[in-house]
Length: 164
Image 1 (tube, rainbow, N blue to C red):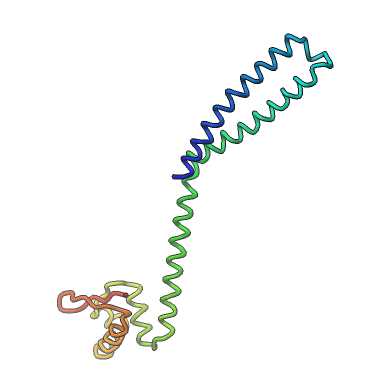
Image 2 (cartoon, one colour):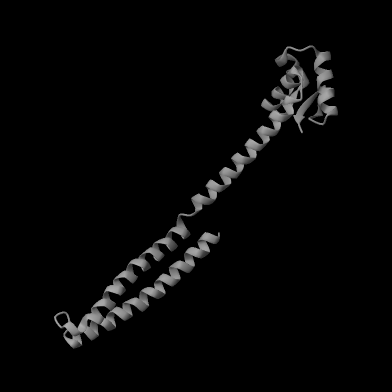
């Protein structure tokens, strides 16, 4: 949003400068014609001023183009920044998950990875997927729930399990 406001300011300033420079160039050209310049050596000052106005046109064109860019094309930068922040957040969550896994045994790691792959997985599905006895699975889930790593939500006759 700030880029848009800045772009509008650049456009307004460049239009005002364009009007001033065109007026100045017109006055210099009129003065040069009245003096019969372009072959007279006394008109060097007018010629140098005309050269300066050409340089000012270049700067003005840049300011105008920058304003135009900021208004219409700078939106992509905001999207890139948002995407980078989202990727950073995702990487941070992945790193936290990996740290948590380091403190768990093999069975707990298997359960945590399965829950991460399918958040809200039921205990019955975990039982089938991990090829673990129901008693062992229940024990592991209770232990993870006590450590506040997962939470169970009643879902019919079984529980859905979510990462905390």
